[in-house]
Amino acid sequence: MSANNLEEAIALTKKFTSKPTNEELLKLYSLYKQASEGDNNEERPGGFDFVAAAKYNSWLALKGKSKEEAAREYVELVNQLSTKHL
Image (cartoon, rainbow, N blue to C red; front, top):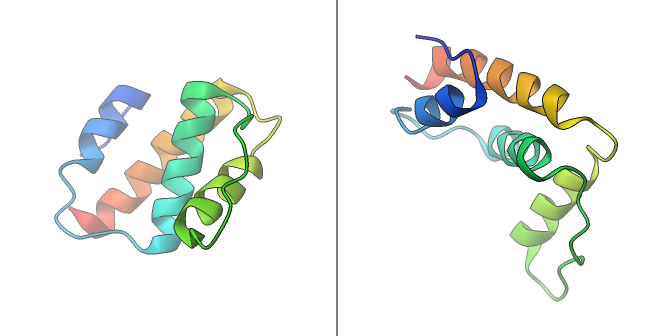
């Protein structure tokens, strides 16, 4: 099974039977955020919220990437991960 667009890819992730690694999850998160919202203009999380900081930094690293390119990469990543997690 493979996805052709962002909505299909999002739906496909909900069918995963095993959980992707933290690194894979961060990549999915950052590509999704870049595809749906564009560049990260949110305030950096403070304190000891390491998960929020990792998500923030992962998304920030994609600054300047177009929404279309991020969506294409998200779909490609979901299709790749589906071979391991479906």
